Image 1 (tube, rainbow, N blue to C red):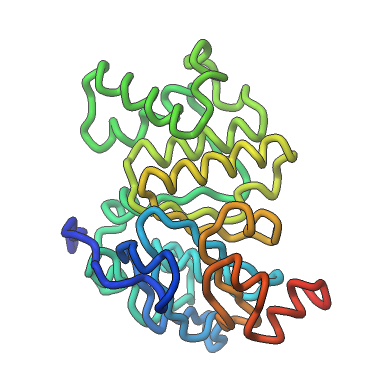
Image 2 (cartoon, rainbow, N blue to C red):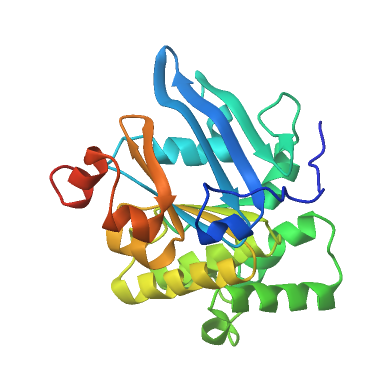
Length: 275
C-alpha cells in the first residue's frame, strides 16, 4: 500500500486572484474528477482547490452531484460496486486516487461526518478513544487527555464530562452528532468532510454544530460541507461551490456568490425558482 505523504501543503493560492483565501495554503485539490456508475457519468469533470483553515460549502438541489463529489475525496465511492472515479484527488501533493493508496491511513487524515449521527455502541469515552487506541495510543493518561481535548473541540465536553462511561446513544441527536465530530477530531485530521451534518437536528443543535465548524476552521482544519440550507452556507462557509445536474457550475467566495452570482442558474437557485 502507498503511504500518505505528510509533506508540507502547497503555498500557491487556493483560489483566484483578489480574495482573502489567497493567503492560505492549498491542502487538497481535485483535478477533473469524475464519478461514473456503469455508463452514467453522475459527476462531470470537477476541479476545485481547498485551503487549510477554510470552510467550503457544496450547494445545489438534490441529486446534483455534491454528495457524490464529497465521497470521491476520501474514496468512499470505491466501495460501491460498478462505480468508477476518474481524475486526480491531490492531498498534500499526492494523488490518492492512484491505485494502491492505503485507505486506512488516508482516512486518518481525511475524516467524515455523516447526515445521521452514527455513534458506536460504546461509551462516550470509548467512542472517542476507539480509533486512537487502534492506531497505537494505549497509555490511559494519553487517551484521557485526547478524549477531553476532542470533546472540548467539538463543544460538548461540559455536557458529557460527568457521564463518559454512559452510552453514546444516551445523548440527544445534536449531542450525538457532536460526539461523532469529536470522534473524527481525535485522529487530528487535516480535512473533515460533512454530508448534511445538521439536516436531522433542531435549530439549537444546528447552531452548536455550526459553532463547532467555525472553531475547527480557527484551528486550521479544512472543512467541506454539503448543505441544502443556504442560510447555513452563508453563516459557516468562506467559499462555496454550486452543483447542478452533475456539473460544478460556479465557485467563489460565499458572500460574493450569494450577493452577485455570475451564472443565471445559481441566481435562479438562490431566489427559489428551482431546487
